[in-house]
Amino acid sequence: MEKQQAAEQIADLILTGFSHYRLRFSEITLGARRRFERAAWGEVQRASSGRINLYDKAVAEVVAELYLHVPGDYVSLGIWCHAKRAYHQLIASRTDYELAETFFNSIFCRVFRHHAISKDSLFVQSSFTAPPLGSQQPIYNRYLPQQGLVALIKQILMDYAFAIPYENLRRDISHIIYCIKQEMGEAFASETASHVDIIKSVFYRNKAAYLVGRIITEKQVKPFVLPLLNNGQGAAYVDTLIMDPDEVSIIFSFTRSYFMVLAPIPSEYVQFLHELLPWKQRYELYISIGFYKHGKTEFYRDFLSHLAQTDDQFIIAPGVKGMVMTVFTLASSQTVFKIIKDYFDPPKEVNKAMVKEKYQLVKIHDRVGRMADTQEFAHFAFPKNRFAPELLAELENVARSNLTITDDQVIIHHLYTERKMIPLNLYIKEVTGETLAAVLDEYGNAIKQLAAANIFPGDMLLKNFGVTRHGRVVFYDYDEICYLTECNFRKIPPPRFPEDEMAAEPWYSVAPNDVFPEEFGVFLFADPKIRQQFIQLHPELFDANYWQELQRLIEQGQVMDVYPYRRIRRFKRRPANQLQKGSKTVLN
Image 1 (cartoon, rainbow, N blue to C red):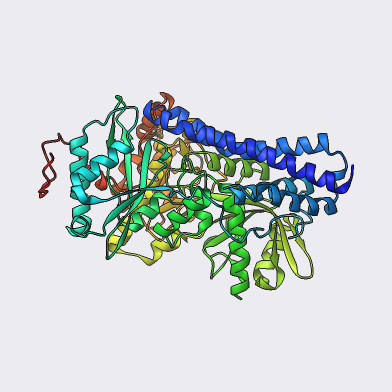
Image 2 (cartoon, rainbow, N blue to C red):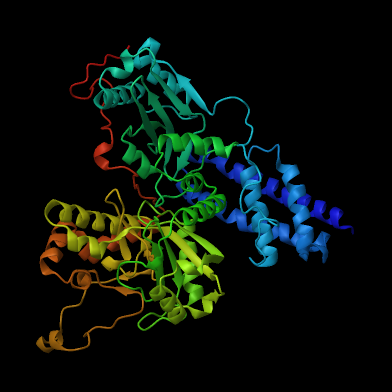
């Protein structure tokens, strides 16, 4: 087989595999609407994890096809340089060429085991200088308030209506208008240049459907998200209207599961979202709409650019050193890099394979806004001169098998990247009063919401949680997590004799999965004042009955409600003729 012929066949096989992957990805995504309408929440969870697993399956299928149809030839780097050029020509007219480039990279890395990476053989940077050509039609619908707010909101809700009716359309319109006026006064309705843009595709996640858009006036642009829920009885309703940019940002947080949204031109969706949330990186937005593999590509490109523009050194991340992971960061970056250690000191009883399984579980599970998403990398190369001596010594001491160190590079064979946060144990030391109370409340809520998603953190120490820029508490240490339903929550039996309480060993048997919530307080908080404050905020966490009841509900198949916004934001579902207090809206 001639070199050019082999290169073209490689390109054809990869593109065919990519097209099949995109088709399956879109089929699962398209099913989101029907699952929402049927309130099929178990199917929602299975579809979400299944879609994540599609990518690696597609890569494996293509590699098998290459072995079958291009035996021997495709291991030549020279051929792959030609294959890259042939592939570039094949994808030039696609509206998702950036995803196609990432797929090519994935195949190359699987074949060459992440070695021989260079700009000649794969797409380290994109081979295109302009975004994909779309249909020349905007990805959003535009609405003008010429007929008044009532008609405008009604038109929007009807344009995005489902196969199930609205529970109470008049009430929902009233709520939305009241909220707009509270946020913007009369400016929106009175300015002739005002309009509303809403992305045509609905964003689905967990139990909700979201309309995502912006309100534009002569003086401002306001992003908004309109969550709609299924009442479980065959009708939909508007749950709230989120217009605060920070609160919109939280809905697209790295702690949330990926949206199901049909995005035939992914770059246009990312561009629209980036205009709404300019402080979010493009890679974050690709990940949020389900293209997490391409998000990794965008992250790596941003990382190279960041290195070129900075000169600070990688250092050991602040906080208590972990027993399983060693963590480092750049002060100028919002990312931490996590490496599994070679050995774990007692009492840890996990191994590397088990840790990787835990991180994959978090990847495909509903993170309910309380677990940080991670991206997994192999053979990640860093410039050696950017490593602080203390960090390099630490890595060589605790993770030597995971390193290759050359004259100018530190190559880490396996690592995770994660968003940088302030460790909760450090944060609590620096705050008092209302701020302390708020973060303790957040910590308790994080534990409860993880439990509602059938996740028990295992090691609930403060050092394993972080605080985001929005003040949210997020779990980020996964080596001991398990499903809540795997735990045996017990009350401590009363002592048999007065001497039992003074004994070094408990007077009752303890099995591996036994958990005694009564012990949480002493275990988690050294400071008795903070401990008592937390107990007052979340007394149920110390009661075995609370945990047992959660287990019962989960085992019955109930998917509990966890909202990506504060409950106080939710509209009250009053009858249509009872408008919000202070509202002067009159429905026709």
